[in-house]
Picture 1 (cartoon, rainbow, N blue to C red):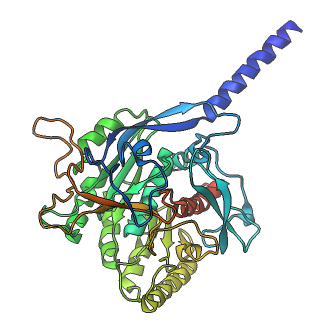
Picture 2 (picture 1 turned 90 degrees about the vertical axis):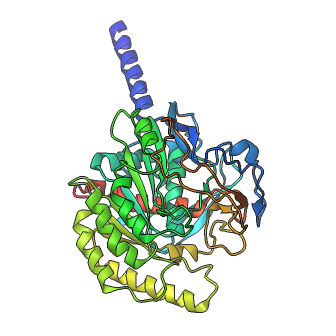
Length: 445
């Protein structure tokens, strides 16, 4: 009997240790800030006041790099459910799997623990399926096990969509969009992470992004061999016990940009690497016609990717009737085209989701964005405008320097609730993850 009890105790301890190893809560500690010495804590929020203490909650406006810490799961679970290390895929759902384009609505499920904002859950109303709440451990395991980077492509709406995933992986309560039209790269592993922004022009006297410059920078920037923050990224990723997962944003707001740059990006990847692409052409593009050359390009790259999400243009806050009808026509066409193509294409109907009856708070003053952003002072005659560092992240003495060392912050462009939490894009990512991760039962995905 005594030996049996000892054996049971050993098995119990082993089971508990396995559980601890299998599931932990993740927290994030920034070690450097993207904006260097820029301090927005004394800047006012406009047009709505910020509903949180900037002095306390945002000592680092936008973390550049940091480290992750792990702890046991409390009895009530991780404070942020997404910050779990659980890696197993969702339960097989067969014919009940939710697609990425279900008609649905948002459910307000109440305040978030330790935060001032309400949490929303977008769920289908036209189906018996349900989007599960998936976590960072499941996403990172999926990407790492397949060697697949994520690449988000489009304009500022897609930049904020991309930044929301970075925010989720870091477990940040709030995020402020840095409001720069340039490529960006996020590298993350179990131990550490690094965020970089590319240069957008070759001439520092220019403010507007240059399409040719952005195209030319794709190979070296996303291979982490040149550009701002290169040395800092290599140093940060040296802490990783295995290769980091790559999440990339490409500033490609028009059809012509994507026609040229998507093939260039795919060529920059190592042989055999199949990324997950999330693509939108939205407010920078005029006209309802979708070029045949664009559709041909998408068809040609399809065998080289794991999944392609085509994301519609939100029209809920487009004031001009003419433009709204233009975007709706384009959305309708692309939805039909995706349905005709099938895998690996999927349609994420951002427009339909944004038109739901109970949407989360968006930008104040009818701004169509859902994330707070920096308002840079660009109207004065002698402003010291923000510049992305053109070095490789070191000064003449070989010392690390901030990627974005100077700038004039005029205000924080706030959301309607002044909380800067962005529940819209968080739910968009949950829809994407449900679509992407549920087919684990199929080894070809």
